[in-house]
Image 1 (cartoon, rainbow, N blue to C red):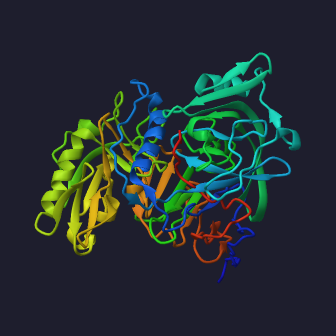
Image 2 (cartoon, helix red, strand yellow):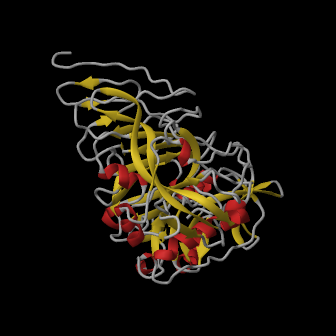
Image 3 (spheres, one colour):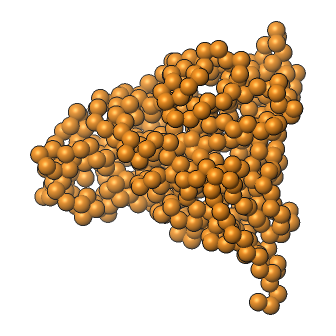
Length: 500
């Protein structure tokens, strides 16, 4: 092919690593993360437990609202529910050590458990080995002192405090369920793979500031879901995505595609996944979380009679996109009209039933053939299409018929939260540079195209890598896998009983 350089690289995602390549100099890299389901595919968990888990993280998320901390009600139900929980593996320190940390788009700080923590769990019911960060054995560790400029900026923007006795820049996070963590900030190297220029970079690293937890309380001390820490993916300056993008190490955008069925898992990219079908809607400015302008809900093409102000961001109200929430929550004023519209559409083909306060339907055939499509309509003309599986939860069988229940929870405090129930099986792009969120339906077990530099058109694509010397266009395969990669292919667990 005249005027072109073709480079073919075979990608092997296995227990070893993932190859990462790019074309053209001075390009921003895209970090690549691979997801796995933490629990077995057929694992069961109580629906009430999911509600309690979401409640705990929502209390923390809503601390930034004018109304303060809001305690969301728990609607009791003990029926089992299949859950996709994801965690990520990050490598910190020199020599690098691997830590399992929960991904949380509702908070900003990455923190891991310190070796000096006495009351922290030593074993985990999640089937992962717990590791403890020890700054004394890392040659690149640097504690953040009270006099450090970084500490001064942290104190102004997040939960931080300075100890005159230790001269350490500390923090205390208290969660809505009564659990909490206390520790201090430290700077050390984060290791990852990047796409940079024409080089294959297998062991990239960058100094970041993160928390070292010395004390934990409440649910954080329980061993059943113990993990090494929490990885905040929020918008504020101390989040890892903000730290890396501010230094030109990654684009100021990240994306995920979470597989909702089968083996679960998915892909998380520190970069922009590209697809021509992606639609975008602006973020509400000056918000701590990913608030969007939800304007209306349509069932079977007909608008549900709800005042748009119900979804608007003001005080304790708003609509938040949060991949750390397992279920989805809808403002109380919209809940009943929404359920009524669904019930009316299937009145001739299902039998309605109330199961532990939840509206359910007994179904003798496929829900895809019976239940109507739902559309969430956002500012900018963007709509999110929901299949029946995106708003219904299978709750077992009654008299030989499958029982499907409304998967949205009524939110009496006025906040609508779009969690994994509706976000699964979609590409979701968090474009912080342009202050927008994009999405499209997608088979998350397939390859994706990833932009190297957000907004400039260079991208990595499926199959094999090919480089066009004239245009600087690189293509790379990024696929869902259950293998454990040793570099920056990170295995994710989104959410926990105590996420911020």
